Image 1: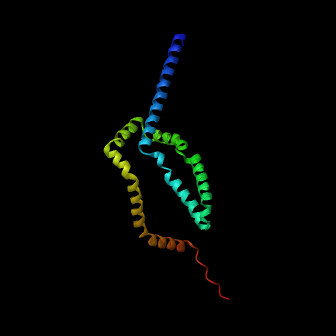
Image 2 (image 1 turned 45 degrees about the vertical axis):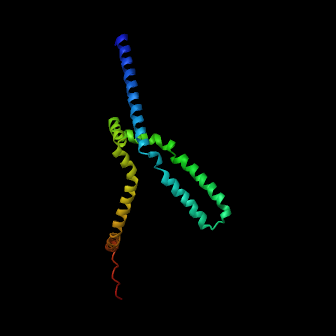
Image 3 (image 1 turned 90 degrees about the vertical axis):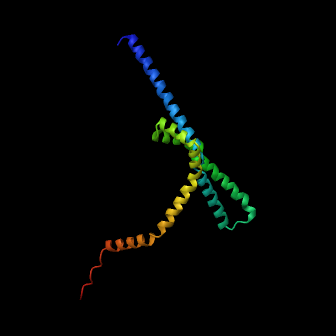
Length: 171
């Protein structure tokens, strides 16, 4: 390969790699915009609330006097700090961006952004958490009717699988 051809090839490769990096950065930026629009930074709020409740319940179980409430609050703050280190938005955002850039093309993310930025998309974002919770409760209530039957079937199967006792020998 001539030096000029090698130089042209190198320039072309550098130009293409720059375009790939720009495309990846743009793709990631769209994923990040979508995650912000979808309030993904609030996904771990229930975890924090659950941990706070665990500490409050333990405090109540120990029948600690009200004067010890600052101790509870101190431990709750420490638990929040531990959670921040593990699942704080700054910790999980890079992985969430990778997750969404892996699942959606840049164009799909742009389409999602356009939808969720529309009035209907905003309404969907607003209503989805409540609908998801209500759907789970509905399913749970319907499932309760099947629990006794499923437990009976499980018991019957277990009985059939257990080895039968050998008849006692006569003397």
